[in-house]
Length: 287
Image 1 (spheres, one colour):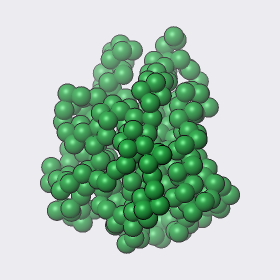
Image 2 (spheres, rainbow, N blue to C red):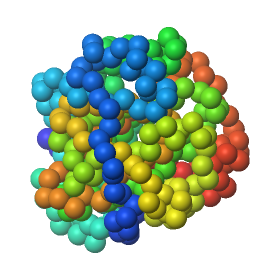
Image 3 (tube, rainbow, N blue to C red):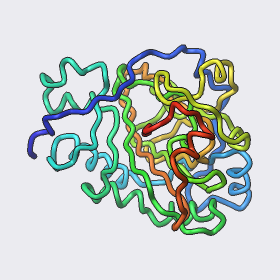
């Protein structure tokens, strides 16, 4: 493989969060496989804003996804520039070996055109069929691809937020997020936490603090639910569901894929409309 790109990008966040922001009171509702999702589970998703699938993908599909991510990080496509490193290694990134960089990456984005193994899982037919059900039968269109990585002891928090605060889709658009565990995701290494049912409260004002986020004071003491997942497990969640992931305090790596879908043909609002709903500090923000 060729060398990793020589102009690394760095995630802007490094500040530690207050531990009280992530104190889950329980584990989310789940089904075993895509085939086990019933009409009652679809209703649960609309009422609570999420649904977990414990065994969404096979070990071979997970292995292919990990191999695809690893290949991009190790420089298989020098023309791919969608890699961000953790801010804390900024001063020493040039001294890291290629292998060491595997545990220094924060996220990858917009990789489907560069890595067919990752595009394949984003377009998994069983998954898309269930997303269509969540959208009331509309055809889903993939509009965002990300890999979210929390290196051992280093991986930073993604503060509490609503994903739709980052997107220009009109309120009322059935935006569905998909979060896929490639390693075991635990409370200790930063699995997703969320507020069931809070998507029905609509948009919340976000502020530019550690990230583009909901104010800490608003989230302190919230009764969150956690989504621990084995490799191949999946979380489906509404674009307005408040959620966040804490710092990885464990010695275990936590890699995940995240995709977002909207109905085919949905027209976007002007950025100014989104800022009216979610706060004026959100200009040019990205997940």
